Amino acid sequence: MIKNFIFLGAPGVGKGTIASLVSGEKGLVHISTGEIFRKEIREQTDLGKQVTSILDSGKYVPDNITNAIVKKSIETKEAKTKGFILDGYPRTIVQADFLNSLGINATAVLLDASDETILSRLSGRNSGRADDNPEVIKTRLKVYNENTAPLIDYYKEKKLLVTINVEGTIESNFKKVKEKLFND
Image 1 (cartoon, one colour):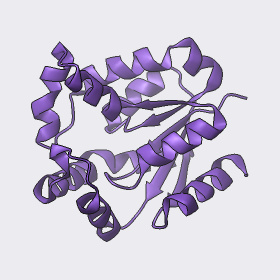
Image 2 (cartoon, rainbow, N blue to C red; image 1 turned 180 degrees about the vertical axis):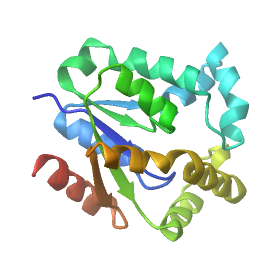
Image 3 (spheres, one colour; image 1 turned 30 degrees about the vertical axis):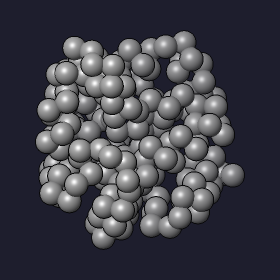
Image 4 (cartoon, rainbow, N blue to C red; image 1 turned 90 degrees about the vertical axis):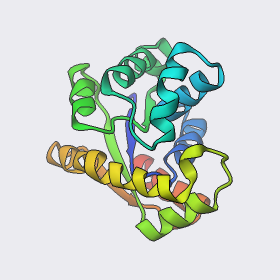
């Protein structure tokens, strides 16, 4: 059976890292809206220019742009045959409803860590990203709590939510995720 997952969690919980590890080991397609946007920015495409100032201020890219990118990504032959992990999407109820309207069957996985852990991870990483400075980190967490946190209830009500504490190391968190999602 094809498995699809939605990785939810605040900035800095390790969604991208764990999604990469899981997709690599399990053969799933890793669809990261953040990576797609960063690639567009690097290549200075029209989309890249459009989202640069939005991302640099810690805000979210508008739903219509993000929805179109995700739809294109999940409709590829590879995603349909192997299954996928959505990393960084949906971030709003509107996006979740859009995904639902596409008939996508996916388990939402909440990667959960304390604000202290998140701040420590983000301020300690040397990503060079403009959105990893302390003030923007606080804005990102505020935006997450206002817009994305309601998704937890959305998926909980649909009985599609699995919560995994990711306070540990990358290795221990990866192991926990595999145990919970694949009984490994």
